[in-house]
Length: 258
Image (tube, rainbow, N blue to C red; front, top):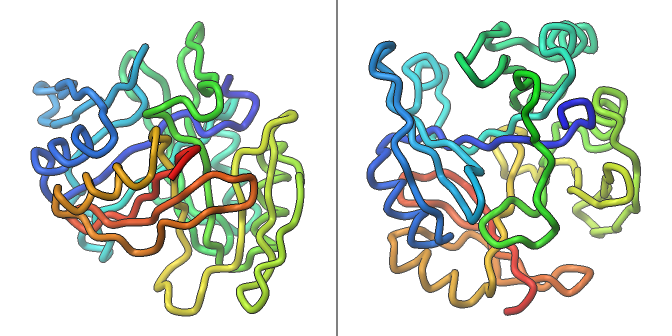
């Protein structure tokens, strides 16, 4: 539900839609379907897992390229009123990159950054739509949301104030600082940390659920992607890998077993 502050949609902006479609359908097991809008000249692909769509794929817009944005994944956070939420983000020191805009038959969205530089989208669906997240660890769905923040503690407070997220636990990562885990209701949904110095800009990173990590790593490398970090076991026993797709977009996978 939009009023609960969940990430409700994910979108890959890429330099080569066909190549990206082939890569993710192979690596994650998604189905892909054309959802373009020819009347407005927009190509769009829906990725689906099981019962329904989980993410979208589009070409990297010219205005994003002009700002130096590389191929990347973006997350949409559901809110009751996107216009009000956009103003609130700006009032707290964030920036508005795209004013609230209608998506015909779907809802309304805006593109913003938090006060410390990480981009995300706000989204209000049309009435009657269910945007509840899938059960934890459902293959093909997004299982974890991680922010490499400009300022971890301050960003954590910002998102909790904006969306009603709550602190679940803190994990001491030594020289890398504190990893602050947030929950929505009684379910842990992600973590926030100050970005490492070598990372050029603050950014969200999203983990896609897969059945097993080693087999997924093989599919990544066979498909032309590159492993950036992992495989690595994380607290709780899950296994993760961080990677880039062939067009350079950063993404991560999480699995219950190696």
